[in-house]
Image (cartoon, rainbow, N blue to C red; front, top):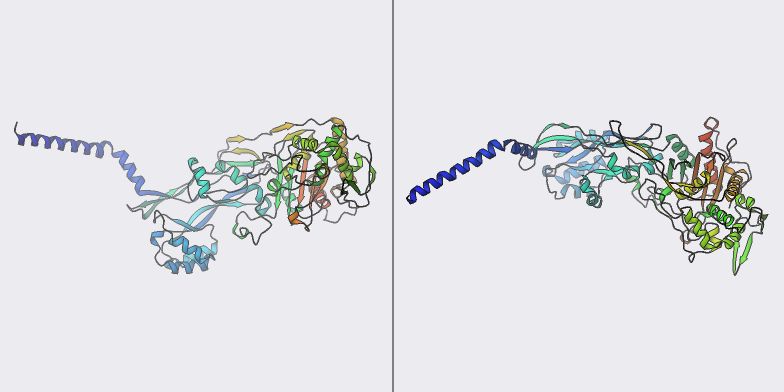
Length: 575
């Protein structure tokens, strides 16, 4: 065979191979490449990620989705940047430098839409449409926003949404999150974000080879996330918010039988639908985003006398009717230790010392018990530890070592010791139920959009503390008398037996000269506790905190007999 024949046959064979490959790609693999081609020329522009609703325990809607509109732009289409900046800054009241950086930034895909501002008002939409001729490449695009039906009344508990940060994206991208997603940034919205987050919908658009949008092909509906039912009672939440009023501090209400949180209020609050005014710390030095119930760390003050009393009774360092004389001051070494009542309480036993919150009595028995034993009892009741409440960012407070404090200060809850209001609520609840330390929780059930149960939270018993029955009886009697005739008398409500303890906490050295913290913890009814309450005031007295708690309990248990607010005429005792 000659060389020409060989080349001819090789060429024919090569042509056959090419034809076979073409047949394979054009005919056999046509469906695959057709779909691939369609995916390359059709894109979905997301119009928001729908989220599940959040309900209170009685089915009242607290949070839901609502239609919204964003202002977006296509970087490739922006030509006269300075003209666009001038128009938009006037319409949106946005800083020109912010707009300049946004509009001139180099984007990976200059044909993708970029958000300038979320949640446009009706007036802003109208003005943008009027100026559309001078705003090429600028569009109003539909979106979804969260509507918080109780506004700031429940802001710290529910939290708020915000665009995902790079740090968050690095942690969450494996779970399907991507840049530009709006996610929960605090509260229930953050803690249960993966349950609440749905599947985004959007506009399906045709693009050319460069990625430029040519036409809208249709709309893809989003799928809502799961709904959440809370343990919160919206009525009790509103009552707590109203009674705290404009005071800086917090209120939390719990069922001592199982740990269900019925209300959680922190003040000052923020508007979860309009965060911008609260972001400037110079204008808001009181930290409106701080959830004081779980993140506020304060000395427990005289509420710690509950621990001191149990430790003294159980170790035999004091008996019920042992008396100690309070003259208003005692000398220990070269130090003078004062009672809050300058003239003293006279001779008192533990049945009077707790109601009158006598520092001399508790300082004396504290020295007998010793620092190590009081610290042991504090830890026994889980003070200085996270409660495990299903909210992000809980802080633990601090229980000092025996070398960091002394028995006089520790016995009355002063010095380096700090606790959180939720821990004090847990403590009084444990006394109310006889020794069970329940984990506080807020989410009762998670259900799908079809009504199927996804997750159901049940009460979790952290531990059971054995409390000597005689010591518990003495303590409970004293707590009841705190409200009957002692420092917590302003919490007294006719027809309801309430047991509680006041606490006045000194401020740190850097805050000397400012008013003290005032606190009150209680439970009711005395014989069958169903409600426990903590009230903590940043600037206030413990009698004021007691009065707030009393008014909350009155409105819960005797809603038909709400009276106008007035000052209690009973003699006021203040630590």
